[in-house]
Image (cartoon, rainbow, N blue to C red; front, side, top):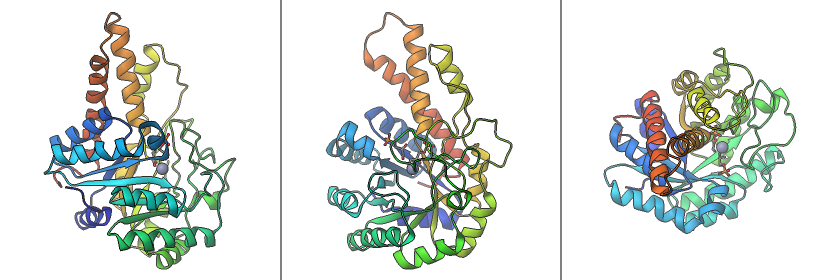
Length: 328
Ligand code: G3H
Ligand code: 13P
Ligand code: ZN
């Protein structure tokens, strides 16, 4: 059944687990996520970005998610709009039947320019007023997502600050977070604690302090009733990079957020963990390998099936690691 994010994350907080929020653009991703959730008895958050709406169109995405609810009626599903850049964008998603929206007021409508605090409060409060009147949950964002190593937001997806960010933008301030939640009544808050979008998060192998766990603890202590959200949480599996590069790809050395650090964040209030890049890497690796090994095949279902199983295994691993499994 379709449920609100508030309802799902309240349960996650009570039982101390996190829920991966996977981005969806097509049938294969949707299938992989649902089959993994079914196999592990996990609740599901699927989210549609602006890029996904541009690729598939909002009606197709909506019906893809509704079809998942129909085929797997025993699994709770949140239909979430990722990175809305204005209250108007959120309003359209609410009208389409999304049960949750993100109003990302940390950046302007161009998705690139960092905004000031007053602007962020204003647009977020307007989105919350509208959404709550319809029983829809809202995620806000405070601080600018960016890698603590490189100071960069990541450039993969059209959402991210331009240029190098300063340390104070890269870590959400706990006092400001408390003020923000009080002023806007958001259900969940995306925080800047060292993650960035895309495959190029870190140039060096992780040494255990990729994220500022300390900052997560401080924010959680100030706003214990607000569910914390980690964007840019792909782990960039080295196995998939190897497969891609072995079969003709050219992806330079790069590292993501280790799963163990995300698990540590979940112990301190992180409830929603956004993952997109890992599914992209698994799909690409699976397609490249299949076509290289089966050069005479031309039925797309053959290689798309490979992407479903590659993504399904990845989703199962995250559901198990984050403690989501067994909570549907
Ligand atoms: O927030 C970023 C997600 O990775 C979505 O990226 O707009 O390319 O679909 P996208
Ligand atoms: P990744 O690029 O790390 O998968 O993050 C996705 C995300 O935060 C979507 O909002
Ligand atoms: Zn994001």
